[in-house]
Length: 223
Image (tube, rainbow, N blue to C red; front, side):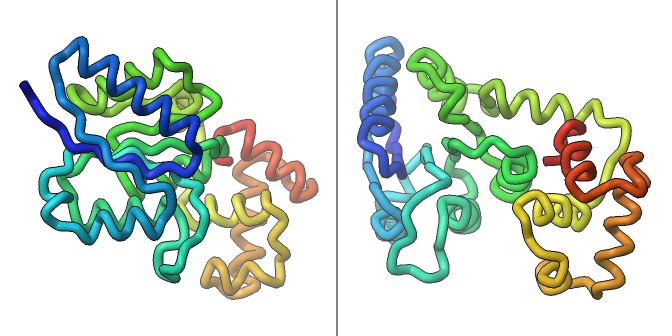
């Protein structure tokens, strides 16, 4: 009988129970023993990552992106933790679960961590969670419907923009002030203004407000 070590990093007890039930169902169907370790916060997860004897036999990690900040000032989110896992244990399969649904953040997660699965909490049903677990073990990647729609938009876009433009749009969408943008984007004030003008021209909203720029960017899947 196959044995798989699984680390679940999740602070919501109900979701932890959903994972356990899903693994139990798969275990009965496929004769796989899942040895499950639970980390309820970032500090607990970091402690497990430092246990090399365990991690060297760990095959799968499910990771909530939005976790409470702990004592470690270098790992401030599930995303930071995912990056650390990829660096230290590149062969371990990572499944991300999150309530985030904006395209910019999801695209960044997929690009930076390259997870084997991305699950949006609002998309999940018990049946889909089981499908996701099975897929990540046997034939990744697995994406829930919100992520699939993002990827379809990425493929079908008639224009494309670079990472700095995407970050500029994202910062504008969350209300970052123009005076703060040069430091965030590592550009001069003139450079920020030029990029914003170019974006408005590219998205056909010249002489319109930043709000119209953001709405257009969202409609096209950039945010």
